[in-house]
Length: 202
Image 1 (cartoon, rainbow, N blue to C red):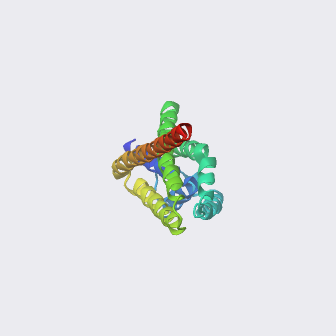
Image 2: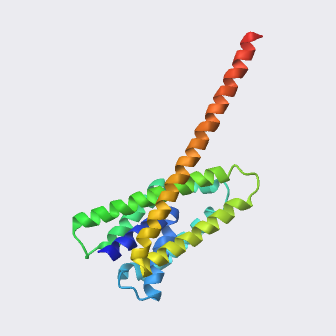
Image 3: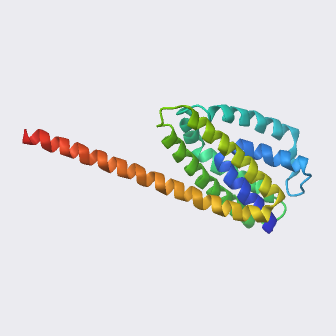
């Protein structure tokens, strides 16, 4: 059960960054490493082809400044829900319906956490005038997805620790960025208030 939990946690967090790549990689790793933890349906040709096409679409969309934020907004629901469904497939037949629901919920929460950090970071990066940082961060995220999925499939117990650390980092990123946004808004309001007071004094 602990091994399945590691796979669920790893795939859940990775889905928050890139759902389609996670499904594709889980299926491919299951084939390559002959992993019994990966269900046959995820290793089927039909699922791999569909996931591969969608991964290609997301790969391109995620590299375009500002459009990536639109794409993230659309996937605010898609990624957590997809992560939950993937978790249910991963544990199907190995546990009770209640545990399947708990696994789906856990994966959904982890995906939402990762997605929130990703989306918030991208909005901040898109304010930069140069176009390269967006693509660099996107490629790093793609690499992180591949690494987390591999650890989840091959070393699920290690994946629990890795996902725990990454989740704390993601929460820290979201909190830090929102504090920055609040501080900027407060300074803007104060500046606007000072300008109004000067106009009144005149």
